[in-house]
Image (tube, rainbow, N blue to C red):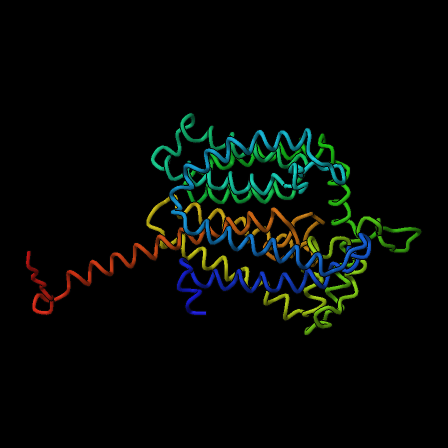
Length: 403
């Protein structure tokens, strides 16, 4: 184990948390794909092998991205943004549509779907980190800084929100947090929020999924109605997912039913992705749910530590943006499962079954570790220099060679 960690640079606790989450993901996904396997006439082992392969590829991408100096991502962000916006437009027009939402692009030859919003999250956060670090002294300049930043955030927001509102809102929230850290004035942040609010209203009222959005919001805030003075469930079919997630959590108790003993996995739609947290609580109990929550909070704590230690503004913005994005997504998924938010299609990072979500999450964590690695290298260099300066002359060895 020590030999393995000696080859892994960066914050070791982040590596440990990722490995624990990945192992837990294998157990939870294998337990929850039984119904899906039955419907498609496949064995559950096939899904386990596929999921294991994706996690393995994600760990490789995480390792490779953490080996690259994080300062290279400043230049890469420009390329990513140049690709992202046209790709999001292409997805809306020609993408694969599921439940009236065009979120995926099918990759030719391998015939695998690719969710472009995952790339857009990585691209926007790295681009914002670059802009905020390079425009630090002219951040309040309207033409040079504010308009390019606001235009980019709003453009990506509306392109994602048209088909995936929950992801767009979380990315917008992360962008606002980065603007706060980047010392953008309250007035300018207010203008960004106002612009985002206008775009949000347009998407909800005019978008192709407006009926779905309004139904989910109504179902979340209005769970009961009165019929001849008797209180009855409101739109029970529309609250089907939320209600069964609550049943899974309630029957899990303190210690759970044990791995593989979930009942609601046979009832809940997408128990292996959107509602995997409810299945985990049903099988591992409230204790298991709290441990999982603490793992994500510990991950955010380690990221914040990296942000405070980073000597460069770009590294701090990069780690903060990517760390906030992952944590907000995890908390949003958990909130939906326990009934604290309307139903969304947000996966639990590194735990839910998925393809591009796991891969881009791994790359994001690799970038955070790259920032941490640079901090460690700088610290070791400074300690080495201090040790050389402090070394007494009498203890130094002088080697005299002959020519």
